[in-house]
Image (tube, rainbow, N blue to C red; front, side, top):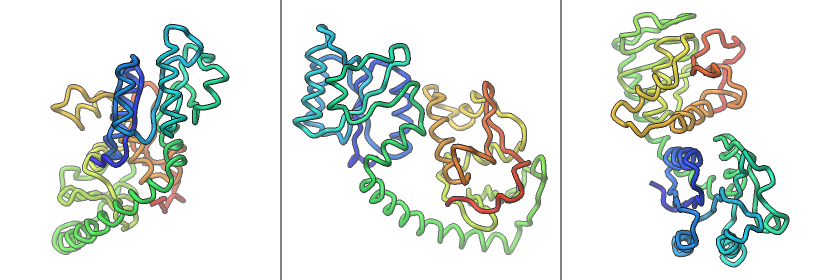
Length: 281
């Protein structure tokens, strides 16, 4: 885990914890989860978080006045940016004084795209440094994987394409539209270009590619990705789906390949526009 970047969370909402847990796990950040009482908030100072997300009322509530003043002290005196997560049930739970020292206010309900956009803009230099390290490591790994793929392709990997489902899906290598999936080297190529997928991202894409155009239920995907983890949640899946789309889609906010079927789950779209022949990778 990349403990160089630490995110503090002051909230009793399990949704916020699940979302940030999944985000931090995917990006190898450390999350510092705290209760909303004064004693817990005090423990943040020696841990020196890079940013604090707060999901408690910042109004002039006498019962919470001390906690609010302590959070304000973290922001002003300790130079730790505070991001306020607005309550979906109460749009006016932050007063004008608090709005002066809060770095940003994110509207409810919080989602991964909103969170990722804010953090990337706020910590551009840190994200760029981490990305350069990861890119270097991936480049080395990709060179090895490409060499393995080239050797394997010389002997047994024949291209097969389909509009609705991969032919011979039990084979080690199959193609779906412009994607070539190699189950031996755990790799995916798009138009011959290797995608930088993590193990979980590959497992997710492979599952979708094996049954093109079928809507896979959210719970079905979670059980496939985390068969022995009863604590895996939809927030974990949303995070990996977001990361996979960033590597596959030209516009992750307007996906053409991996579609969300609202209320049900996801599917790989074999009818994606034919002019999508380059990815934003």
